[in-house]
Length: 309
Image (spheres, rainbow, N blue to C red):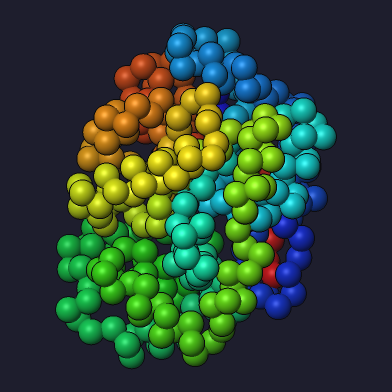
C-alpha cells in the first residue's frame, strides 16, 4: 500500500509568485495516473486493516490518499473531485485553527516566502533574534534538513530557523514581528482553513477527519508533556463534533517520536502517519509499528511537482 501526502491544492494565485502548491489540474492528472497504474484503497478496505492487518497483502500497490493541515483547498477543490470519482481521503486537521483567528506559523512562513522569498526575510529575522532564543542542540541536529527540497538556500534557511532552531516559546512572537514588515495576519488567515461545518459535511460524505496536533509544531522540538497536550487537546476537540470509525494521527512535519507513540497508545489511536523516509506499507508495518506509518509526498510521482504563484 502506498500512502500519498498532499498539502496545498488550488488554482494559481498571482499575488504570491513564489508560493508552492499543486495545481488542481495536475492533481486530477495524478489521480488518473494512480487509477491506471495502481488503483485506490476504499474506505471499507482501510477500516478493515484495523482488525486484520494481514489484509494489507491484498492491497499491494493500491493508493491511500491523505491531506494535511485542514486547508480550505481541501473543501473547495479536493472534496468535490474525490466525491465525483467515488474515492475517499483522510484529512488531518491542526485544531488551533478553530481556537484562534490567526494562521498557524507553518502557513505564515509559507505565505511570507511565497510573497517575499527567503533573503529579505532572513535578514529581518536575524535583526530580531537574540542568541538566547536559539536551541543550540537543534543547530547541529537539524542542519541538513530540507536538503532534498529544490528551494534556494535562503528559503531553506528561513524554514530551518523557524521550524527547528528557534525555541518554541519565542517562535510565534518573532514571526509576528516579521509579518508586520511584509503582510497582514488577517489577510493570510482569511479563507485559508476549513470550517467545522465543512469538516462535518466531508465526514458525512465518506471522508475521514483526523488529528494533526493542536499547533502543528514539530514533536521533535517538544517535551513529553507538550506532546501529550498536542494530541489530547486535538482529538478531544475533533471528537466533540465528529465521531470517526477509526482514530488516526499525522505527525507535523512527518516526524514521529517515542513519547508521542506512548500517548497515541494511551489515547486509543489506531494508526499514526509519518513521512520520513517514504516507503510502501505492508502488514508487518501495521503490526510492528502502527504509530509510524510512512507516506510518500505527492511530488515523488508524475504530475505531483509544485507549481509556483
